[in-house]
Amino acid sequence: MTDWLAVLSMVLIIEGALPLLMPAQWKDWFGRLTRLSDGQLRFVGLICVACGVMGWASLR
Image (cartoon, rainbow, N blue to C red; front, side, top):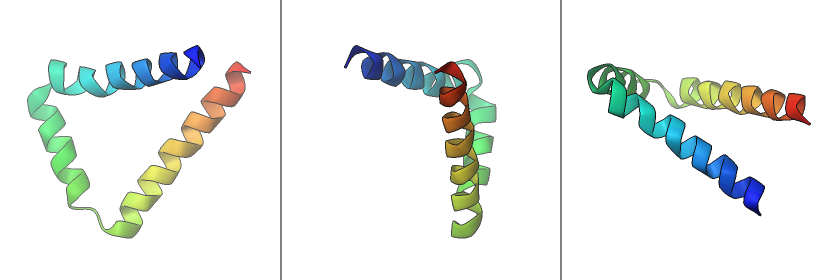
C-alpha cells in the first residue's frame, strides 16, 4: 500500500510542478490539448500509458 501512496505522491508532485513553475506555458499546452479530437487525445493517452508501463517495467 505504501508503494501506491508513493506513486500517487509522485504523480501529484509532477502534475503540480508544471502549473507552479510555468503557468503561462502550462495554460497554452492545456489549451492545445482541449482542441485535439477524441481520437488524437486517446492516442496521446495511449502513448502516456505505454511510456508509464515501460518505465514501471524497467524498475522491476
